[in-house]
Every structure is written in C-alpha cells, then in structure tokens.
Image 1 (cartoon, rainbow, N blue to C red):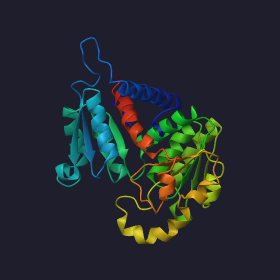
Image 2 (image 1 turned 60 degrees about the vertical axis):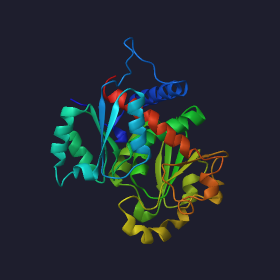
Image 3 (image 1 turned 180 degrees about the vertical axis):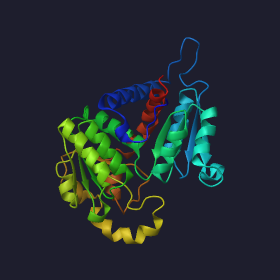
Length: 313
C-alpha cells in the first residue's frame, strides 16, 4: 500500500528528523555541484514522474517540486485546474486511478482537504498534500529545517505564529509539537485554529514535554519567542472576505514594535507571498532577522527528501 503525506501529523518524530537530515544532505550536495549518480550514472529519480495536480496558482510549491524532480533525474508534469477540472469534467477518484497508471507520485495543491484525501483513497501511488484548506505540511517541513539550521536544534525553541489560525498554523502546531518546539498562536477569537487539530497538537506537545497555546494577544504570543511567523490575512479563495478581515487583523501586524517583545535576535518567518504593509511591515520582512527566502529555498530540499522517502529510495 502506498504511503501518503497528507498532514504534518502523518510522520513520527524519528521520521521527521530523518527527513530533515536527508534534506540537509541534499541541500549540501546541490550547493556543491549536484547530486551523486549511481554506478550506472543514473540519478535516484531517473525515469520517474511526479504529477502536479494544482487547483490553485503557485510559485514556490510548483517550482520547488519541478526543480527537485529535475535535479534528481525525474520529471514533474504540471496539471492545472483547466487541464483536469476535478469534480467537473472528471471525478477525483478517476483522476487518481488514471494518474496511478502513469506516474510514480502525485502532489496536489487543492482548495478542499477532502479532495486530497479522496485522491489518496483511490491512488495506488504516494499522494502529497502540497496545500489544502486544512494544512500546508510541506511548508512546515521547510520551516523546521530553517529553524534547525539557524539554532542548531529544534528541541525547546519557541515559535510564535501571529495572524489567521489557518492551514499554515495547523501544520506548524502539529509538526512543532512533534519535534519538541513550543508553539504559540496569537489570533483573533473568531479566527482560532480548528479545535480538532489544536487538540491533536496539544496531545503531541504533552508527549514531548512542550506546549501549544492559543491567545488573542499578539504580544503574549511573541513574548520571548525565538521566531515570529505570520501569513497573509486573506488566503486564496477568501478574497471576498478581505474588507471584513483587514480591521480585525490590523492589531496582529508584525512590525518593529511587536518584535521588541521577542528574544533578542529572534527570526522573522513568512510562507510567502507577503503583503508588505498589511500582515508585516517592510522593515521586518526585509530586515536582517528575516529568513523568508531561506524558507523558500528549503522547500526545494525538503520536498526532494519527502519524495525519496515516500518512494522508499
């Protein structure tokens, strides 16, 4: 049976740490001139194809998957909503069944989490959640790699997330708790994380001796934090809510004043794209504490490590 990656909760602590180790090795190899070939001169994904089923536009996710496949000798086949029209021209189960006959793995960037779950139910090859309304687990893997590179560890760090308790917040809570990171979410009361995901993250945190907390106070969330993370106030598909959300989230803007409450030298993180002047001010995201482009770079290497792991290579 194929192994899927639909949630940040799908991996154990040991599996995540091994994946991050592998991503770090892949990153070092790439920076030193490329990945090694086997005795026959082949790269590890030679002759293999990853289907990229995308209902949403993308920069980092698409390019990181396509470039990663190319760097490892494989190929990424991009399929937009216009190409497939899942649930319209062709059912989700039929898409999964067809793709399983042609490719070795599927990465799906979708609106509804149920779509990626259905793909996984009917596919006989690994399915990767490249983003859904519930989670963004590939992003969280890159974020944890970035934190580990800067601090040399993850255990005991405190990551503060300020803004909408959305898919990014969900995956950060789950993966952070798994790895022994304290996670604090500062968000408006009406935009708290999903209660079921929060409960799961809290259980994992207790097992690791850390905490996952949610507070309506952005200052309380970032107090003494090693890193402060934010995301756009209005995600893709929520554009009709933008005018209503803006005044609600204005107190949660990450700016220089908010950063003064963190630990000295705390990092600033963002999954991108960013709206400068809204969820974050330019002096913070473009300042010396920002690691947003390192996070983006690390998407490439964690996604390569993830594909290799799911394919058992």
